[in-house]
Amino acid sequence: MLSTPPKIRTLQRKLYTKAKQEPAYRFYALYDKVCRQDILSHAYARVRANGGAPGVDGLIFEAVERGEGVAAFVQGIQFPRMPPGRRRMPWCEEHRKAVCGKTARTV
Image (cartoon, rainbow, N blue to C red; front, side):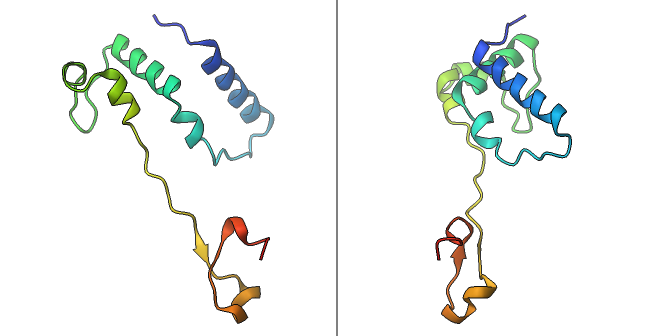
């Protein structure tokens, strides 16, 4: 059995503690934490050691290792990013311009 590296274990502990302390808290920004290369590499190694089945794409471990290699495969994993939301703010209707959510306070 593979042991979890200390950096990943620390992240797991922090997320667990936060979830237990504040049950109503919503983790909206986990993308940057899940897509770290060390986490993806460790996840691949654990699934490989566990004898995981092919996913929905039908890709098996031998095909990944024979083809592009594990490092390139893990590095190529990308989750779709959502574009920043653009909407019209009621208080700036007179200016007739869309304001991005991040810059709404600076307008």
